[in-house]
Length: 204
Image 1 (cartoon, rainbow, N blue to C red):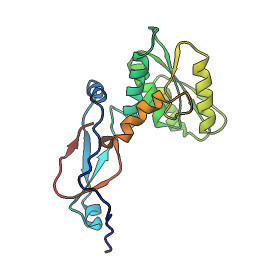
Image 2 (image 1 turned 180 degrees about the vertical axis):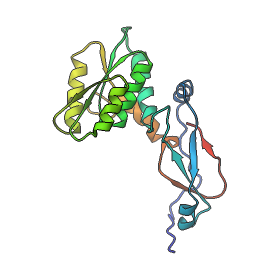
Image 3 (image 1 turned 90 degrees about the vertical axis):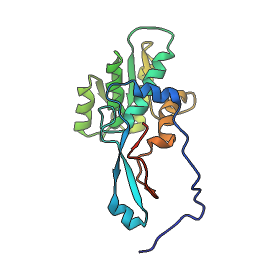
């Protein structure tokens, strides 16, 4: 077996911790639990390391994807910053997990959801979004077309807020809140070789 090593590896590097207000918010949600780390001994043996641990994101706040983290935090922040009170419609475009997460947490926080989906989204994914209580609109076209339609819809409704996971000029804050959770290492879902013994759980 050929073992490949990174000569530039900085073993002292540690990921930045997630902001404390984000962690406090997620820990306040029903169903919160630290991510389970699954041991992969076979991969560790083949990789020539002591242990490989993979984050199991198959049940994150009741949803089968880490998207629940970004969607819940972004909705919370967007609604917290609104001047006007009352129920709103949370709008987004999606090809699956992000839209379902937006629909789930819009409903949990007492609001409506309008989800725009492009061509090619599986019927099961659309059904899962509708089962969260969202209005789903099919857009003939690709993902970018659905994003444009969602943005126009939100802009035309004073009682709507767009919670999109992609940014463009003039729309950076909300995608930034979502990406903060992915850019900070605790939310990385890739298997990472770990030398020596480590904890069985990671925070958030």
